[in-house]
Image 1 (tube, rainbow, N blue to C red):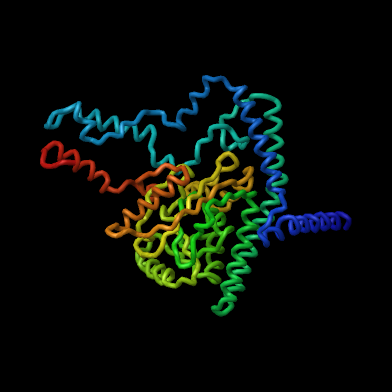
Image 2: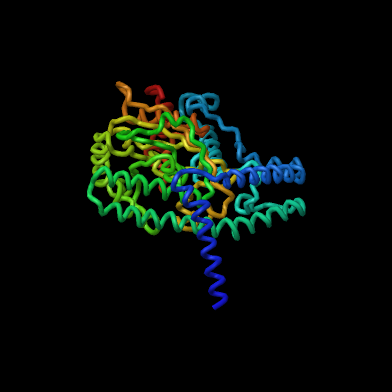
Length: 433
């Protein structure tokens, strides 16, 4: 009985500390300064570790990091210019060398598929998974790494799991209960309160530090918020500062439970990626939503998949065809403290969250940008590209024209046929490229 009493006292003390120091401040959106102190200690530690690593690693090994900045020099000139010095008007065998060179460039350094793997770090951040080739440098650095493992797994992980369990449970229970109320201003207010409170708790479960910029441009009701997509926690990051009606793919497992609970309290729009009929229904519901200026702004990630925090890939035109005001938002994570990218083809939601909870922290910047509308004579694709370019510039991300769907599918035949047509035009000489 003494052991059970001791365990009960420890559990009650633990929950009391969590309630007083984290949960209550989260409800009111305030901070007691504990996370700020933790971040200062963490920054100093990582700076010290970087100096020790630079002193202990020979300068020659710096060549190993060349892959992160490009290991080959690409020739971005068009096909016509690239072949002009190798051939005449007719087909020549030397043309094979040009296509072979382009093929080898794509194999050695593919600018698309590398966006679906974790971002390269300039310096090791004392997380084992970010440097599997770590070699012994000094006893001090090794002891700091061991101490970091103990802190992350024995102190932070139990705390974060507790907070995540409380936050997700409150979200599921709260939205389910609010969903039983009749439609009214009270229901909307309670729904926003539940979403804000639970998202703030879940962000604390990741030791999240978020810097919001240009708050005067925050998305307004009746508008459409579009942002680049790195992780499912993008939703938590944005909802911590304001509520949204979300649009996204239907998920199973833990994510599916959360989605089904949330839609009871707020008009979120979930759809099946594989069913074309759903897309027309989604478009119709979105138009009806933005027509009501009292409803929450819609949150959409036009890339349709998670990209690894280095780039912005093609925006699907669907969300730019329905009209309304677009509120662009750029999100950029700091990979030094933790990798926020979700490689959904490699990790399920639970294992991904465990990786996040055993990182140092999640630190990111969010830039709200001036609202944008479709210009006269501008089609949906041009509008989507203009918004994508603005987000890429603001977030310091690389802008790529490729479809994020290449994460799960092969390149469309139309892309191959376009290059074949260009080459055939050069051969027969019947028109400019």
